[in-house]
Picture 1 (cartoon, rainbow, N blue to C red):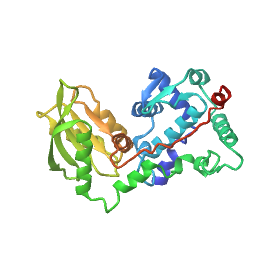
Picture 2 (cartoon, rainbow, N blue to C red):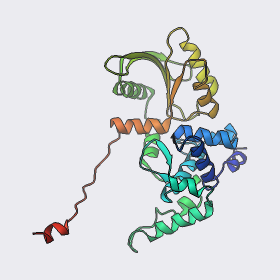
Picture 3 (tube, helix red, strand yellow):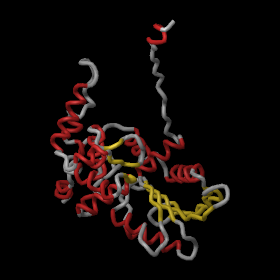
Picture 4 (cartoon, rainbow, N blue to C red):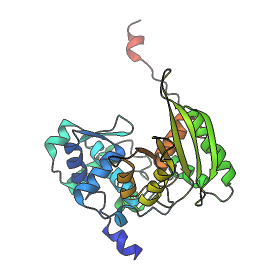
Length: 294
């Protein structure tokens, strides 16, 4: 059954034009999750198809393939890759739509092959098995390594609870109260989030330590537990959210619930340098013109 569902997941080439179309309809740019949801909505992809996880559990296969589609479009100059968290279409990309996915893939592979010296290691170029069936392969990225650490048997529930509290405090929460654990092991509580020096808001949160996608019913149940107590909710998971869960979180007429999935969690830990450090590599350049001017 799983193999049958996996076969229905579009490959990265098949997602290139849907991604461009989605960005056009969203005004030329969109937050990553917003762009992903627009593609799913436009193409009518089934939730079962978009919720299949990679072997590591770090990401859904659909998101992984959409990310590769975006990378190829960036390499071709059809999308702007300079802004983290926001996917932006370039004027060139607008004019090129619809693109020929096979030509895009071939062009990017040629560019990658031509870069660097002949002795350069070609193991990471798009012409290798990593991209031959790109959606099925995972390079050992820092995100994957972090995901593995968070889900190791040696990483206890108590350690995860401490990490969750540290993350929330570093993100601006004060007066943090952890009520305990839900039946599924989630950490629940509330705190005051300092929005600016003058304004604060009480936020109810739930942090899930799981590989399984968070479902619509779980979002709805969390909102139900908030009723009469507050109007701001936050769910953080080391996994992902189903399409219907995302739709439920922003449904009109009920309190909004912000969602943070495993990918966003990893980036937030990196930003806060909580167990994830960025090393700056020194690059020395000789200014020949400066010496010529002496």
